[in-house]
Image: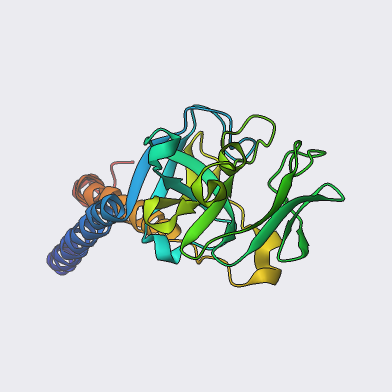
Length: 248
């Protein structure tokens, strides 16, 4: 009886070891693959000012997906460089794209192509623009950008007298912000106020990558813990079998 039990335990032990090894291997693939793929797709940035508050405040750490400027849509928060703006990484929101006509304000709201935009990302009670924006038609291949903090953001409105009326070329865009990771505020809210003007951007695979890293970590920890737990359980079973029947 005891020899049969021993063989059964050994078989279970070998199967458990194989499964734990497979879990660790799969976990490593998911964990490391998620980090590597994330490093290829995403670039971290630290936002130095409050020009995008309350969405992003000074000192926040964001993850931005590297994209082609041609993929930018209205409502996107983008990282870009513009020589006449200082040629440094800047973070602003796209409110109009090439061919759009933008102005402000009507009933305190931004107007794009004749439609008032509900900007849910603005601070409660804040008007779309304090100084107003004259009617501007955005040249093709260019973007009109505003900060979410309209009272102090040096955005397209601060460059209206320049060539192209303060707009920025799509080719100047380096990345699109998907999430604030420090503090952990998570994914940016969808800018649904622009849906009536056309399709919004599809969020990047950040959630999928995060899930892969978390699942990978759990598999590594679980698979690695199997060996010590199995050994402890085997010792207890062995002690129970070795104990004389009348010892108690």
